[in-house]
Amino acid sequence: MDRRTTLQWMLAAAALPAWPGAAAAVTGTKPAGYGTDPKVVKVYRSGELWPLKFTASQRRTAAALCGLIIPADDQSQSAAELKVHIFIDEWISAPYPAYVLDRQLIAQGLAWLNTESAKRFGKPFAATDASQQRKICDDICWLPQAKPEFTQAAKFFARFRDLTAGGFYTTPEGARDLRFVGNKPSETFDGPPAEVLKIVGVV
Image (tube, rainbow, N blue to C red):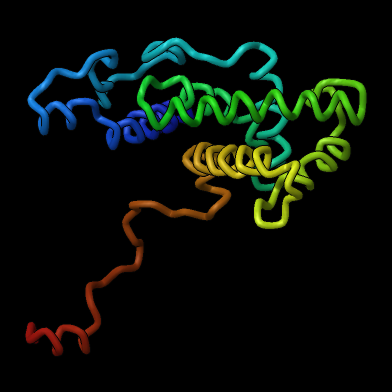
């Protein structure tokens, strides 16, 4: 399964807890405004399920932050190179209530990054180098220790980091980075040990 398919499956699965029909089943009323749930066996193009919400500026900022959170190394490409920011755009663009809350938090957070970057370095976050980006993110990367003026930005960073990790580690490259083997048959499995078979009464 390629990266795009993996992200599409994750996106479709993530939408299930907020299935709009669940409320209708309880109340007997028809929900409005969502449409049908995605068909998980269909391959969707980016933006086909719902219009994407990131502006070009937001997408650049999100890509820069993804690359900072999970940079490239000798094991894999960066989260930005694997287009995880596009996955996040798909996520926050979903019409379900929980995702709308993420949309608000992330849109505000991306705007804060650019404002803070302009204040400190005179240019947008995506135009700064990695060391400058880290100086900003060091102030918001751990909510319990964030200064009061950075509390909201730290909440944004925590959610964005979770989404970045979720998107990255469900790609084939990210799974390999975790050394996840998956459902592959063992080449040397000869059945359960005799001691176990005796315990369950098979032999």
